[in-house]
Image 1 (cartoon, helix red, strand yellow):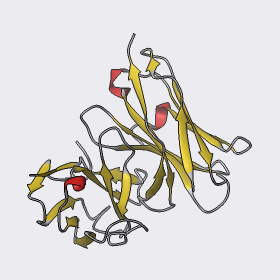
Image 2 (tube, rainbow over the protein chains, first blue to last red):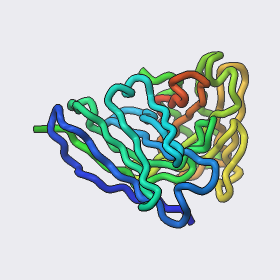
Image 3 (cartoon, each protein chain N blue to C red):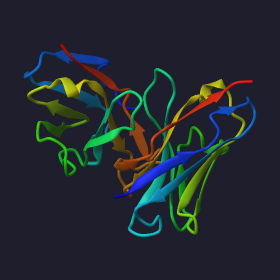
Length: 120
Length: 111
């Protein structure tokens, strides 16, 4: 049974970098034809896809965030990570990692969610 | 403003049926049969309920069904139960650099 466990700071200062990690258990991040993605939900708002990557390193990002995002993978640790630079209060959100079926809007396994607050 | 348009709220009594619409454009919902629906209870991770417009993942009740006509997809919940009270989000593949778009969400209330 695939499980995704998120970790990372819950508070980030404005202009700094938000960093989150998603550790996959119950399966290998490099097996199967799946992407691994990040989605967020600002308070009181809907879901927003941030970006996804394939285990070999290919990435694709939401154009609205692309200039500030890096999603990377560490297959040796069965993890993938999100970095979002130059954060502002608008980046305050619950961030989710999820397994993403390719060429689709299908996210079938999700992490528990991480509330990240941007505040000084 | 979300890329896909959903009603903000829908309510009905237990046992009734409801439908939630999800309106996109010909660049997403209208072209691709890659529409998914998610159930989201506050404080929990979203749960995939429907994928590829009509398909249910294993373990999802057959009271949930999906359909699409033109640029609008729909989620129908029949025999509404108290446990169905949640937020529901649609999403679609776009085939553009945006890749994936979500709707703004619909709050379902069981009266």
